[in-house]
Length: 199
Image 1 (tube, one colour):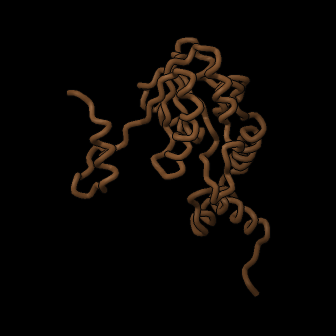
Image 2: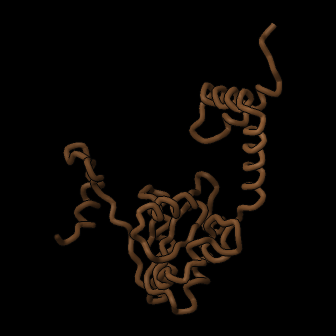
Image 3: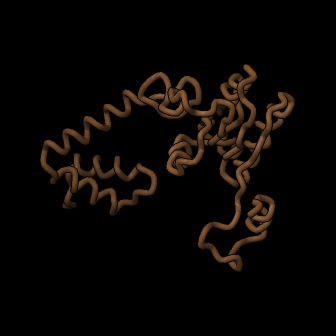
């Protein structure tokens, strides 16, 4: 007879559904949670339930928030004339970690990907275009990933923005800091050249 504990198997299965978590890591996490003090398990479960019920989308930029507006949109010091368009809420956190960007964001919640059944209508493009109609925004930075889908999404959205007379820019992609030029592919080197800055 196999060693079978139904509730442990279910907990392991739920951890395994998380991105980047394999079966062995899921088992380790499950064992950790059930052998930790009961108070920890209760706090863990409460934090999970609380986050799931309280976190939603900012009514302006569609980023994650536990209020009506996200912290960036609620900050009166941010430059509302520049919108950085990203595909995922995690991208906002990545930009915020740099502490350099002072504008605001717009989260699309995906990229156009016909193979995955994701068309423009499933993204937050209408909400972005509505934000551009008041004349406040002077520049839109297209910061979708440098993939075929990310490039197609940036190109698609740009076609609607150009007639508005708003400046559209794209992130410069190129050789990473610490990278060796000999290992960079042609597209990466071309982007590095195109995005070069004066020193």
